[in-house]
Amino acid sequence: MMEEPPVNRAIHPIERESYEILRARVDTSGLPRLTRAVTERVIHSSADPCYLTDLVTDEDALAAGARALAAGAPIVVDSAMTAAGITSRPVSCLIGDPRTADLARREHITRSAAGIRLACAQAGPGAVYVIGTAPTALAELLTRGLGIGASPALVIGLPVGFVGAVESKSALRACGLPSLSNRSEKGGAAVAAAAVNALLYADLQEIA
Image (cartoon, rainbow, N blue to C red; front, side):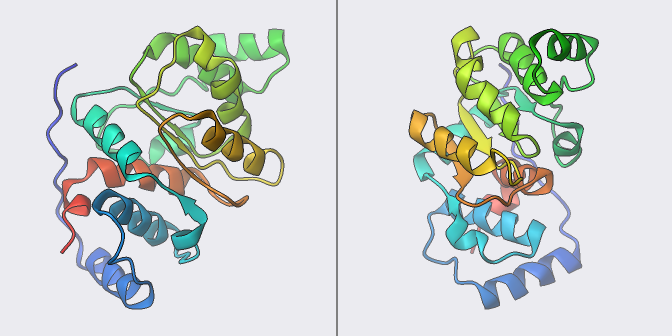
């Protein structure tokens, strides 16, 4: 894999002001560097300070994910909405692939689950998986994906919903993979994309 340089951005004054307000309301100063970058970016994207205690993070896992991304690891996402939030790097999203629809029909699974199953075989070991929309995609990664060659560098599991979201995220934490998740039903494509963006954007990792 070709090493990717950290992504540097021109920071808009509104974003800078937003972070100032965030830090005035929520004390993140005691968090480790990458945990703080991810937590703040998730709170910024959602305007929800409760993520400070809802997120389940591990600094070593985030560091492994950041190293993998810097080394050019593939980014696999569960939906077009999640993909739309990651603009600095190409991502693999097979939700619209004709093979995905065919597999979903044959196996009686969701298209999100079918897309992740195909992506696991295609991406190979060392990819970063970003699940923000479909609990079924995260469940598929854990039950079938690992058996067909997926050995992720990091799984960002933040799907949203009242059906299966809490359970799939709990299973992710229990399986021992390097991961980032949250405890509640909330989450979503924007939140999951924000988490991976925090590991991609150099300015979000260099916090004063």
